[in-house]
Image (cartoon, rainbow, N blue to C red; front, top):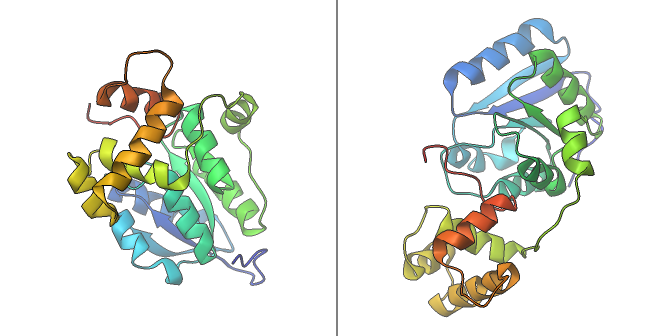
Length: 222
């Protein structure tokens, strides 16, 4: 359910960013320099955001790397399904990740190297239900999106199993609330999609292909 365009004169914004300095810095800049925009929510983690989905404001500024294993696609879809529009603001400028964010429903993807004024412009467009296309997004969206496509459940399974939240099939099954056989079935389907030779893909090789395809994020600490 979407509430756009915003009918009230003030655009209310939530910021989801795990670095307090960046979160507070953007909030203070918007409040001091962006008339008609009011920051009403500040969240330092996805868990905190998820617990307040129904209370989110008109537009949510979402960071990509929040120190958890929840797929970016799932976060954007969860926010959008609750009503708000999403503007992603991140240090990650990988075209595959940008495509993932836009295809999931984000109306803008702003690099953190951009000025706060660019974020403001994106917020005003998002409040109207309109996309804000930067040069980076234009290039990423023009690039052909090649490679296999995963179902929502397949993406969820590989995100948990290969994203660091679980070490074993049993742990993955427990986290997702499905059977071990179900986990095996989805992993086998993903491996078939990414297989390009006779040799079976190792766990590491599959993860690398998922990262290169934009389905998993690189480990920033690796």
